[in-house]
Image 1 (cartoon, rainbow, N blue to C red):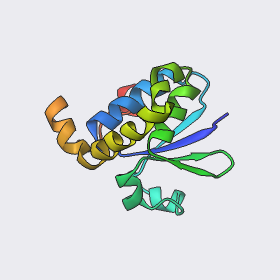
Image 2 (spheres, rainbow, N blue to C red):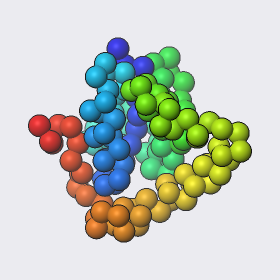
Image 3 (spheres, rainbow, N blue to C red):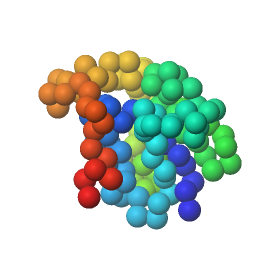
Image 4 (cartoon, one colour):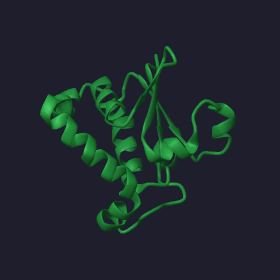
Amino acid sequence: MTQLTMFFDGGCPLCASEIRHLEKLDRDKKIAFEDIYAPLFTERFPHIDVKKADLVLHGQWSDGSIIYGLDVTYHSWALVGKGHWVAILRWPVFKQLAQLGYRFFARYRHRISALVTGKGRCEPCATKEDVK
């Protein structure tokens, strides 16, 4: 049963890579992954502002409540049993530094992707459906 819907930028190589990794670990299908640039996204999720979701990662719990940024990251990894990998994101002092780092990454993720992967954007990056 889906507990969290994660709204991500499917054109970001680093974002798509993280999503592929989470999908592989999500054996119980606790997370639904939605590309904010997919066709009909705004019709399916009119309450999610694509421009805002492009700036900050958005997630939605099954009860409809919305979470943002590193909270989405932490909870998605916790749902697939890897919360210990990202537990440091919850530590009081580190949490503030991590938020600053996240804001920097979110703003410059395409440039960072270009440095790391050689591609700043892809149309769309390979996801679970493309890899089959």
